[in-house]
Amino acid sequence: MKIVEILCSPGKTGFFFDDQKAIKQGAKNDGAFYGGKPVTEGFTSVRQAGEAISVMMVLENGSVAYGDCAAVQYSGAGGRDPLFLAKDFIPVIEKEIVPMYKGKDITTFREMADRVDKYVDAKTGKQFHTAIRYGVTQACLDAVAKSKGKLMAQIIAMEYGTQIADKIIPIFSQSGDDRYMNADKMIMKGADVLPHALFNHVEEKVGLKGEKIVAYIEWLRDRILTNKPYETYNPVFHMDVYGTLGIVFNNDMEAVASYIASLEAVAAPFHLRIEGPVDMGEREAQIQALKVICELLDKKGSKVEIVADEWCNTLEDIVDFTTHKSGHMAQIKTPDLGGINNSIEAVIHCQKHGMGAYLGGTCNETNRSAEICAHVAMATQPVQYLAKPGMGVDEGYMIVFNEMQRILALKDKI
Image (cartoon, rainbow, N blue to C red; front, side, top):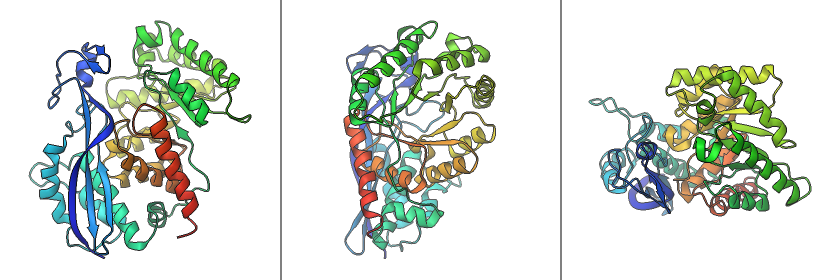
């Protein structure tokens, strides 16, 4: 079967693009807005509506395969590709990507994904924007599935030698700053992993001695014990602290590890994960710091898990963090890896080498990218999968829960 046409349409994401550099330099919240002027190239305001591009492949049989190109909330920061705006990148797709696929036979997902994901411009030495690779490879996976009358999860399982899960993957829901009301929503829905909580500011959210995190964990623990949606409800606590513990404890890894270990008793009877305890400002130092923290926690007999996030962005990064045992779990931030083939390979690599695989992403994705990543999750079985897009809990949780349930219902029927 051939691809007879490829079309693009501009879209919106489930959240915003935020100029991280401007925020770090002091831009302040004003309702949903941020005051001040942007400093990162491409931004017209510190916060602006997130954008996406739907890439639609029309097949010979009249069906349409599609995926959504999307980038993370903090685009243009930390070495990432520039701000992803539809008006800038639809012409790139139409000129550069369409000829790769239009009029061509649908082959395998891996071959079709590699065309765009592995392409390097001979003059510049650069690849296509990660968002383009992300969305186009989604469309490729859908095209292969539709040409064979199969689920996308089935195609992944066939091509990568994996087994589709017999139950949904544990869903990790994120609260944003509304960490109390949104935690209530998660509890009512029975979220398996919660609440992320966005502890990204020492004085306002973490506390100068980490006391505000302690108080929040106490509140969350008691809230669940008092309001269990069912008797056996036993979620994992997963807190993202954005490197702030390094600031609180002046990058004294022994002090950081001791503090993290102390949180275990506070969270009990619930298991605890801490994402991004420190941010050392560059990749190699981050790898070493997380390795040391994990070793110290192991020596203390602590069961708290460390999740690698900062400076662990690409497939290569995930391989290196895994090799050095720099974390008990790695977040696989799907848009940052480019093609979803890389996210698949990242999960498989983590599983083979003793690293927990957290198939994540960003609040700034779309319903379509979240649904397709649900197929990746069901076919590769990571430890947890992020409820996305958005920060409202209900919408993202619904999208990924429902798609995984559809896969369960259909996987043995087609």
